[in-house]
Length: 511
Ligand code: BES
Ligand code: MN
Ligand code: ZN
Image 1 (cartoon, rainbow, N blue to C red):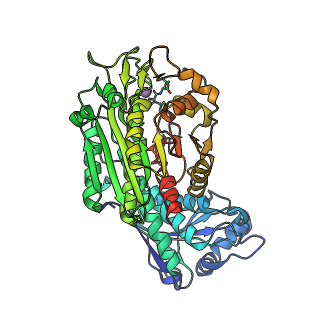
Image 2: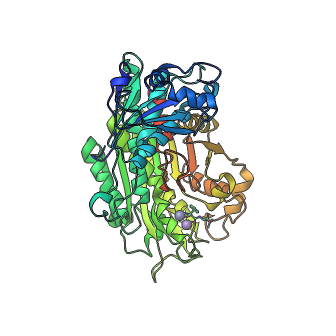
Image 3: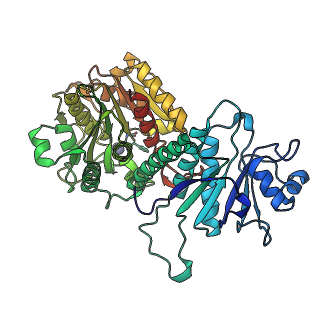
């Protein structure tokens, strides 16, 4: 998708000994080489190295436990690889897609550390019935490309040789011939990971660069590249369409707000589209209900939902999936000025419902309200909105799951299953009717905050008011959209979540 992206290709195993590469990464399951023999490529490599690897395993210094890594240097003539990195894949009985994603992420990070511009990975496949070759290959491609991502475009390049190298090519070595399904796995993994990296980039770009205008330009670029219809409503059009909630949030900012709409129309005619709505709040100061200074810089990530929607649309363009999907991104800043909206203000939303603003920091639901009611015109089969909506979601689930709420349990189940498959997990919270009472207003149809208790749930109840009867799921990604980058295929900052989940879900909806 961009010229700096890591390229991943499949190669045959025959002749691993003669395969020239700056770094050969060989995966070993826990137990292999100890009680049982080393297998496959690990065995071949061990023999070429004169039994070095099996000696280390026998001594008990390498067991194949997940996360273990051992660097070996072949002597001249033993092996064409400059270096061999053996990495632990853990218990083969429990190996799943995520295991391969992580192993691939570690591999590429080792390549960066060693200054290798290329690497070759070879991982054994488990026979545990949990995961097949196509998904394994796809997960390896994802892990490699996600792990290779760095956000350094705003750092000046260090002079001369100190210039950090980028890994540009990864070979995935497989036994025997390369079946078509493996090529398909590589391709899908590439598209999904490149899309997620696009979402990460948009998330990581600071508020002075990733402005609403920048998101609109990004959407235009996607439209042009893939021949998608794009519609961008600016201030004038938003006024004409009476998008009072989105306009109110933008009132305190000099940046023009937009409602961005991208249409991927490749489904059978007459079908109802899926609609994605992403929060594109490019910087959230809280407005007059201002946030505290500590950590406020993180609010540049408040457009992560919108970034994921744009990235998914790009992936759909790449994959040419035969389905209709509309991506909607309401985008604005939430700042302070003499014109900013104030607590107590009552807005008229695009749908016509009036909203009492009791907290200007509950702005995400305001811009989404207008985005969601705009979605109605597409007569959607389902709507999924994605937003860094509440700090309460971080408290409830931390960084390991996004909160999922909605009006349709089977749609929540679909999303949950898709998230499980790509390890972008979601977990449901209840939408009992009683929670709705917290956003009752004395002066308007509804108020924009239900206070601290069950903040994620009352946020979802607010959105539900604008959705109608369409099956709908709200994903609160406040805890998952950015982080400290502990997973091997992540880095500090934006995670791009839930880009892969959404692509996976849409794929499951094809046919
Ligand atoms: N963008 C924030 C939510 C957020 C918090 C995202 C922490 C990521 C990390 C959102 O606009 C917000 O400020 N929500 C308020 C809502 C409250 C005023 C009802 C919150 O969660 O405190
Ligand atoms: Mn806010
Ligand atoms: Zn916000």
